Structure formats: structure tokens, C-alpha cells
Length: 140
Image 1 (cartoon, one colour):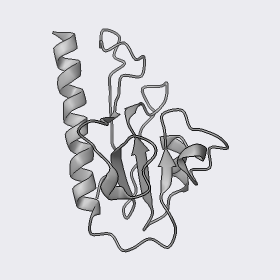
Image 2 (tube, rainbow, N blue to C red):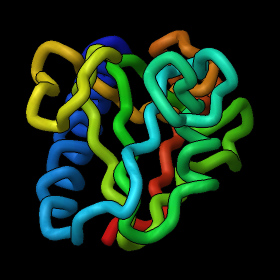
Image 3 (cartoon, helix red, strand yellow):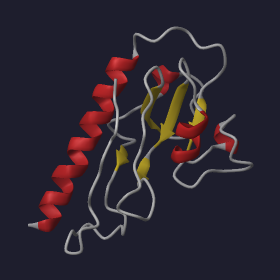
Image 4 (cartoon, rainbow, N blue to C red):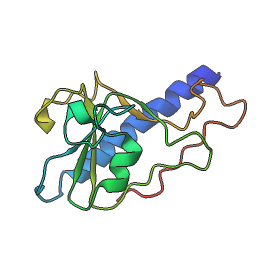
């Protein structure tokens, strides 16, 4: 039952991310390139390229209105504590479904490159200890 619930929750978050992406299509053109994100970051982790990808929390902390964040496939948790959250700011477009080598947003494949925002902070797909709380504070 827990495994089925976990899969359902993950499916819901993929859908939420896809809906957030659809909402973001109305944003104005960017003055700069996207912030690139992988689950653990890469290179110098400044988000300037896939080779220097930031973590999602770092990208969310530095992005400003009008920015795009391109998130590579993987499972992303907000931190290690139940009080950790993803805070999405108005005017920032968050796009998932990237393999990690794309140069254009229309190259992403969010069906085959699932990007999952998860509350399963212990990474065990169970919620016997209350570790599966997910709070997205703001999506607009």
C-alpha cells in the first residue's frame, strides 16, 4: 500500500510540475539564459550551464522574476528536515523534463525524463516515520 501511495504521490508531483510549466509559458523573454539544475549540482554549481548546474534549492534562491530554471530528470527533496520546503517565487518559470544536455526548452522530454519534487526526505518510499511531507509554499 505504501509503495502504491508513493507512486501516486510522485505522479501527482510530475503533474503539478507540468501544470506549473504550462502556467509559466506566459512569462516575458529572458534577459539571460536559464539556470541549469541537476539533483546534486555539477562543476562550480553556479547554474550557468549543464556542466556547472546548481542544486534546485540554490537555483530557487538566486532566481529573480523573469528567470527560467531548467531542471534535469531526477528526484528532488527540499532538504533533510520536515520543515524544509521548496519556495517558488512568482515570475520564475520552473521547467522539468531535461536529460541534461539540451540547449533549447523545446528539446526537453518530460515524459521520459521525469522531474519529481518529493517530500520523501529519507528516500525510502515509505511514510512510517512521517518523512513524506511536501509543501510547495507558493505557485503563481
